[in-house]
Length: 120
Image (cartoon, rainbow, N blue to C red; front, side, top):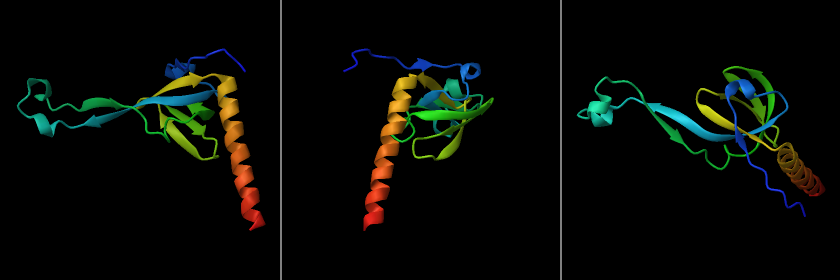
């Protein structure tokens, strides 16, 4: 068994390249501060930014298909495509072996379930 532990590395937008595996670290949302009118922090009426951890589905490894900053076109292991806006999404590079292993295991499971569904 491989004893090496790898760490995901947070990426700056310009470091994102086609073919690499990434995962979303956080998603930033902006809110208009109507809830705290008396607070001096919100007196100017500027949007308030809050970073949230991604839910389980958003935290799964993704493969970069194309980059046109600030947008990154990615696909997941289920072959669903989506666009990340790196102004809102903080991403980390995932070790290539980890990403490949994840994608391969999901693909094997999908093929197995498809084959069993055809038998019915």
